[in-house]
Image (cartoon, rainbow over all chains, first blue to last red; front, side, top):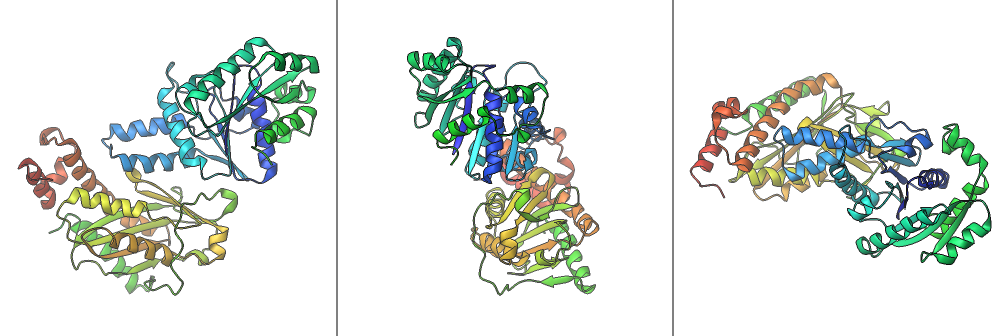
Length: 247
Length: 238
């Protein structure tokens, strides 16, 4: 199953993804973790330093084409090789980062490689978790075409919920077979989540409380692989189970 | 004369010298059943042996020859087989020779190449970077315990190649002995790659401005490339 964590910037997608990665590590399932956000926050949250990224793959492919090697099959097996080189492994997990192009502006080409990589690798792992770029860009560009479930993350603000609804609308058109559900993050009082649930058209499948342990890990840049069981981690794991992603 | 004559001579010399030194083994008839095919992703934690990590030596080479110039079914190995490896990694070279009648070099090359690319064995992940001629493989613990050997890989490759139209014989050489042996083949491999690149450029770009072409040197010295060029410029190509 391929699950993408999507939502407005700053709502805690990366934290949710990091807790999901820790849960997958504990499950023993062979899993691919994709940091699809050019901000590269997931690598940092997990304490992973990728030696190569998909942007490096892109640069290597550009060199191949510049050298006159344009045969499609040769380029396809080269992508397979280069993407494998870009995987950073830790026990049953393999981590892939989109990276940050030095040139400012369009990420389209890296996103195309990301789409191909997800399609190529996704079926070879028992589970794939993608920490998507904030907003709708990657969903809109069909980067998430192979995704089975879109986990929408919002905090309790109406603006974040609206962005999640927009992403659901776009993903519903682009990947109509994918499931979708909302995780309401950083809930301080149950009434806050009740309020969200009262007006949103999204199916709320999880509520994650504000949690000092998570805040401490974020602030201290500690690896979420070392996160002890806490209310937020329990809630994220039960949400991922509700999405059918974790047993 | 054939396109890869020079490279074939170098490979034959390598095989002969290894045989004379008692370092070459024939794995032509593995007693085991054919290994099941299938794409495999082998993670580090499941890997018992890595072959061809570029840091310790890796080489992949595919050439063709005229009919009768390959020992059909021959699978040769210089160095330890998978079960004999003492560490967790081995250098790795894979040289594949297909013999037969190939009237359209471009299509034949692509068919042969695809046959090699599409040979996938369960429990063996194989990744290749054609421009660097490297082949990076991982053997899973499960496949190793079940007895996967170089002979299985060779047999599977030859079976795939024999399905390619025009192929009448195929043989494979594997080297796991060390970087030094692989280096002795690297010149031939680089030469083969350059010939293939020149041929691909002729067919794909249909540009015959020799003055500006980076493959001018090989095209002027290799008769078969000259003939391919003439065939294309005469408009006889398919």
